[in-house]
Amino acid sequence: MSRKPTTLEEWKSTLLAAAAMVVASFLAWFGLSRLSEGTAGDTIGTIASVGLVVWMVSQSWFYMTQVKSPRRILLLMGVSFIQVVPFLFAAAYGAFGYQDNCVIGAQGPADILYFSYVTFTTVGYGDMSPTGLCRALAVAEAVTGYILLGLFVAAAVALYARNHSPD
Image (tube, rainbow, N blue to C red; front, side, top):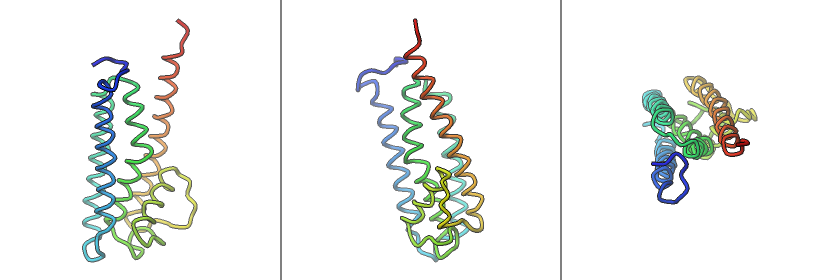
């Protein structure tokens, strides 16, 4: 595979990987954030959180060792930044349950997703707040947001510099 993908055929595997990440994260959020109060709780939430950590470590390893094209890395990081990571954190929050078991003030899946995006981007409006084990999860999400945004900006600047350097 070339280091500078230019055709749709060369981008095909990267676009499929990005689409798979989007679908998988949406399904995780959709399924876990709709658990009944009897099913959701610390056990399911902890399992979902461990799964989230395993997914993030495996994706980081994949980006660093297997993807050689800076353009592909930038696309995959952009998809992760915009959609995948906040949806997966929202899935983990939802797995802990509602009725103030995880996020005080959250009434359903849409509230959990909103809280996840506000936490991931470190905006922190203050209208909802984590409680219990979800406090550690919220800290991890905020740190992930900082790191991923920094890596994304660094990759974009490096790619721009590489393509626009005087020869």
